Image 1 (tube, rainbow, N blue to C red):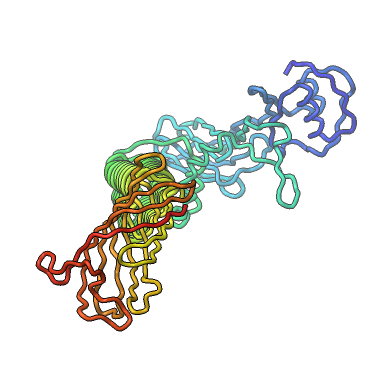
Image 2 (image 1 turned 120 degrees about the horizontal axis):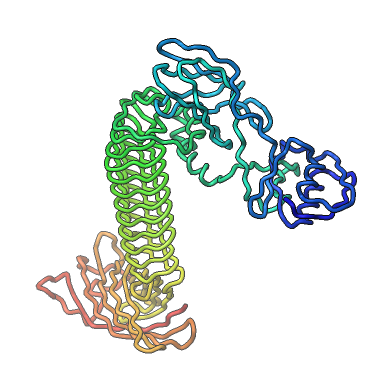
Length: 581
């Protein structure tokens, strides 16, 4: 504040004048725009000034300055924090404290401020005019009132025992010193207007405390006063052995229930508490601002603002806004915003915001935005945004960005794979992709699409006897294969496949079960030739040929009566072709 600068300011806007001083001295100002008239014109005669002298001439009296690193915080000189307006003796049983809550910088009345006695958990909220009234027991030898409001600093007032009092209590706004530059105290709206940014101190901490109250479930089941009080009182929590609630607010801890962490909590219909250390039961719902552990059960839903540890069971839904360690069971769904270590079990879906170490089991789908180390099981789909080190098993689709384990499903999709994908369609975006055109001893024209990883790829294939009018044959099937490198340009591909053969009648079953051992030689970056032996095990219950179609025996070298069954035949054959891609 005693640093000297040279200044010469004539008929400049106040905000521009502050910017000039800021640039000259290489620091930033932080202030709330509602305490300074930005557009007022100011003058500063040419000369050398300390920062304090320059500010005093520009702003006048009534302001105080606070240095914080490379910032200077400007604020109005606070009015007297607490004034006793009136006092009178109370009754033998009670005293009543009334008064107003005001802004210590502007003198404006503050609505929805929380006034509470922390020892006996008595509380009140100021009304729209900043007025409050709170009744305390007069038998207590000493008492104090704490006052809290979001975006204001907390304050505590000592109460004179046995006296009714009328007070005026001032709160000081929280100022954020973490502003990047003097100009950044304003933000521009979509229509080009400049509006002041909120100076709110540590915003992430405040937002984390607000998280429970901002959820849909809390907005539905908590009153406006309950939400306001929780937003105001961020740092005060106390502990008790047990609490009982009928509904939030109608509790053994009254309206301060959200600030109490209990060992045991029993909610007939529903409850709203600070947290639970041993067990909580709710007929319909349980809402907790902080952590819960060991056992939590509700008929409809549980909502935990911190971490959950142990067993959490709900008839419909569970939400944990931080980490879940244990077992979470929801009749319909579970949602954990951070990590899960243990198991999530839901009738419909599980959603996790970060990593899962354990099991996700759902009737329809599992969604995980982090890494999975364990298993995902679902009736329809599993979706993992990062890595899977384990198993994804679903009735239809599995997805992960990177696979280090196994996917089993109708459709498996991954960006890259060091594991195994087992399904009808396996898509590895950075994996193994081949389009094969080939011939063999049974069908002279065949095409196959092979996709997956070199460890294990799936095969969709079809074939026909092209150009043979009296020996028509159509095949379509599925298989699995692996690619084993022998040399940089040479590999061997063992493949197993099953194809349905159509010989003119759908009522018969004709199956070609085939093992290929083909050797593939690269002749270009995306082209290779392959050939190799094959063994076919053929099953058919079709006894007579259909005109124009091949004889059901299919192959002249077929040897009947294998395994003493005249429907099976087998032979050794071959295949040869070209791979593209």
